[in-house]
Image 1 (cartoon, rainbow, N blue to C red):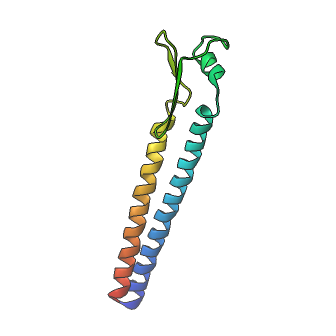
Image 2 (image 1 turned 90 degrees about the vertical axis):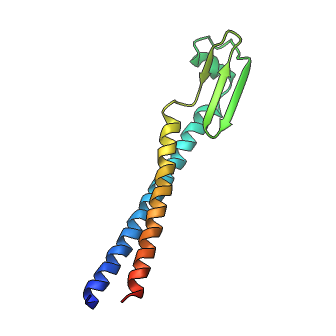
Image 3 (image 1 turned 60 degrees about the vertical axis):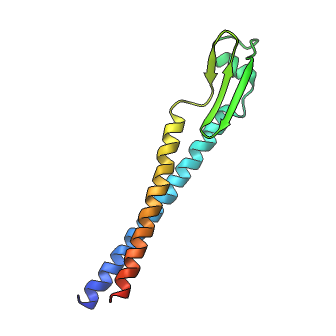
Length: 123
C-alpha cells in the first residue's frame, strides 16, 4: 500500500469517527429535549390539570397521582377507574430511539477510531 493511499484511508477513518461522534451528540441533544418536554408536561402540573385532561372538570380531584422519572409518566387516577397520563404517549418511544442512537453512534465512533489507529500502526 502506498503512503498516499494509507494516509487517505486513515483520514477516511478519522472522518467516519467524527461523523459518528457528531451523530451521538445530536441524538443526545434530542434525548435531552424529549426528556425535558416530558418532564415539563407532567411533573410541573397539578391535580386541576389532571381533572381537565380527564374531562372531569377543574373541581374534581384525583385520588392518587403517580410519577415516574424513567419511563416518564405522570398518571392521575380516580376511584371510578378513570386515569390519565399527562406525558404524551409518543414521547417515551422517541426517547428510547434517541437513547439507542446515542449508544449505537458512540459504539461506531469508537470502532472507527480504533480502525484508524490500527491503520496508522500498519503504515
